[in-house]
Image 1 (tube, rainbow, N blue to C red):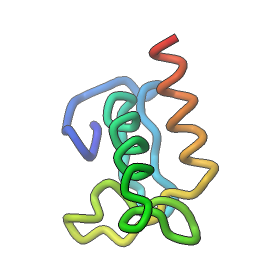
Image 2 (cartoon, rainbow, N blue to C red):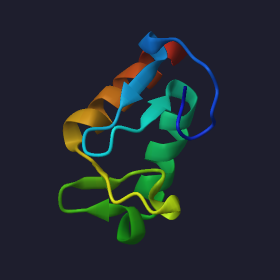
Image 3 (tube, one colour):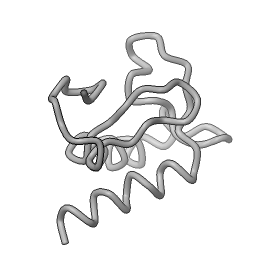
Length: 79
């Protein structure tokens, strides 16, 4: 289950975020990365990007390795 949109998706289309354990699906990952990079001052921190569930109180950080995985999963689906 995607922690952002709450859709049931297959494990192949989910990525688990490093520090908090939230899962994010392919569709939400694309939106998340685009949104975070569009708000560098608010979403980018020294260790990576803030978790997309940060507005709900999550303090997790999505590291560079996971950002790469999110982008790779998105490219696989769009390709």
